[in-house]
Length: 594
Image 1 (cartoon, rainbow, N blue to C red):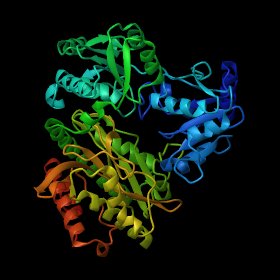
Image 2 (image 1 turned 90 degrees about the horizontal axis):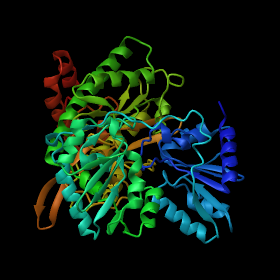
Image 3 (image 1 turned 30 degrees about the vertical axis):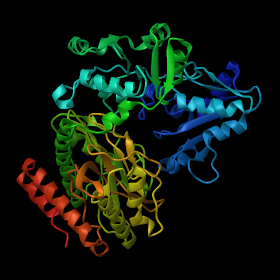
Image 4 (image 1 turned 120 degrees about the vertical axis):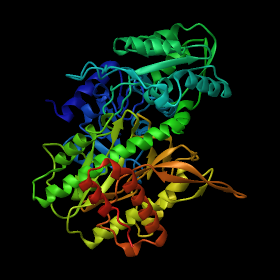
C-alpha cells in the first residue's frame, strides 16, 4: 500500500503531464453530497484524512489540507508523518483555499480540478481570483488513472415513498417547483442535489452510506421532467408510477448529452452547488440562458408537511425505545464488570435500532466516544482503535436511525461512574444551553444566527465556546444534515413553522472531556399579538437525559420545569412500548428534578 507522500507524488506527476501547476481535490461527488459514496472519496484516498469535510490542495512544491474545528484533532493525527500541512479553517492566520492558491500560482500557471465533482460556485470564485494573477483553471480528471483499486459507482435498488407517507405526490411537488421557477423568471432547472431529487420525486435508494438516496438527476422544464438514473435498478412499477405523474426516465450518463443537444429556448436556474461540468454544458448551448440562483427545493423541503411531521414523531418514538434499551444494556454491562469498548456500543445500538419496525439502518456513523476521545467532535472508534469503558467519567454517544417514516439524530452523554466536579459543572452548563433553546419563544423573522447566539450564552459567560454550530436541520427519510435552516452564527434563514432543527450545544476540552446533549426540535407557532407572531420549539426526541451528573443548584426554576415536562412526555410516549421492567426503569430515570 502506498504512503500518503507516495500518492501525492503520483498526483504531481499527473499534474505535470496535464500541464498543471496545482491541483484541487474537494470533498465532493457530482451532486455536492455531504456523505460521499466510496467511489468519490478522492480527498481521503490521497490525504489519509477521513473526516467528512476537507479540501486538499497540491502544488509543485507543497500540499495542504483544510478542515474545520470538528476535525482539528483528527486531522493532525491522520496527517502526521506526511508532507501535507493542516490549515485550520476560521483560525486567525489561516488562509482560505482561494487565498492559498492565489499566492501559489502566477502568470501562465494552471490549476487543475475535476469539473464533474467541483461545484460551480467554487470554480467561479477560483477563476475570478486567479485571473488577477494571470493564472487559469483547467477542468480535467487526474484521479481516475492513478487511484488504484478505486471502488465502483454504487447502484442499489431504488424505490418510491408512497404519497400518503410523503404527504404529496411527485406531480404536486413538480407543480410547486415550476411555480417557484416562474417566480424567479426561469422555466427550467437541472436538479442535481441528491436530497432535492429524492424529495421532488419521492425517490429513495441506498447509494450513500447511511443516507437513502439514489444517484440521479432530474431535468425539469415548464412542460416536462426527466429522471436520469441507472434504469436497471428502478422497478417497472416505479417507472410506470413516475411516468403517470409526468416524469420520463433516461440513463444516468445521458444528462450532459441531453443538455448539449437541447433545442428549446429556456431560462435555466443554476444553483452554485451544481457541478462545473453541467454548468459548462449549459453555457455552451445558446438555447439556454443561464440564471444563477438558489435551489428552491432546499427551502421547500426544509418545511415539513403534516404527514411528514406525524411520521417523524412516530419514528422518534421507535428510536427512543431503542435508546432506552441501549442505556439499560449499558448499565447492566457496567454492573456486571463486563469488558466493553466503544465499538461494542456502536454494534449494540445498530442491533437495537435494526429491531425496530421499518428501520433502514443508521443515519450516520455512530460516535461512541469515552472520556477524552469525546473532545474530538467527530471521533469514530474502530476495532483496531477503540477504548475500553471504565466506571468513571463520561461516554458520549451521538447516533441516529433511518426509518421508512423518518430520520433521527440524537446525542446523550452518560455518566459511567465517578465524576470530577469539573465534569459535573460542564455537563450542567451544556444542559442549560440545550434547555435555553428548547424553551425559547421568539418573534417570527429570527434566524439561526440570532438563536445560535442565545444558545451560547450559557457557556460564553464562563469563557467557554464550541467550534461548531448549535444545530442543523434533519431530512425526512433523507440526509441527517439538511438546510437551509441551521443554528449557526452565519445562518440568515428565518425560522418557519414546520422546520426541524437539532439542539446540540457542547463543551469539548482537548485531552479532558467532551459533552453534548442533542434533541431534535420542531418549529411551531406560539402566541400572536400586537408585536407579531411568536414561534417556539417542541421536542420530537423521546429519550431520557441523564440526570446523574446534573448540579441542580445551577438550574433555574424554568429550566427545571422544562426538563421535568420533557421527561414526562418521554415516559408517556415510550412506556406503552416497553416491557414492565423497562417501563419501571424509565419511570425512575424520568422522575421530576426538584
